[in-house]
Length: 105
Ligand SMILES: [Zn+2]
Ligand SMILES: [Zn+2]
Image (cartoon, rainbow, N blue to C red):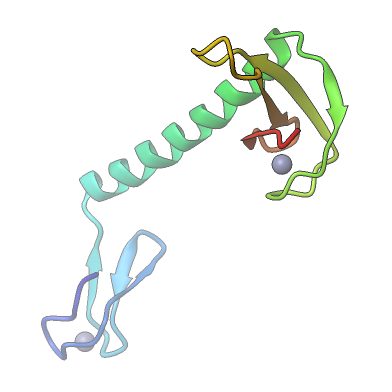
């Protein structure tokens, strides 16, 4: 958040610049733009990884209701907990958004 050195108003980003209603403008530095771009790129990379996982691993599918996106197709797999006495835990991953949670049954 930056404030105008002329009038003290909050500066609003606009098309690679920041502008004040008093007429003051300032270009965002190249570093600022690069940081923003890098951040977006890494977010997208994470999404790609999740999608690739789903495609590579042949997990059984099941009907679900994703509490995040409302998707109805999910993958499930079982993880045996460290103690052999405990029942294995089922995990479910939404095929649409990659949301993963522990199954209740
Ligand atoms: Zn101003
Ligand atoms: Zn989902």
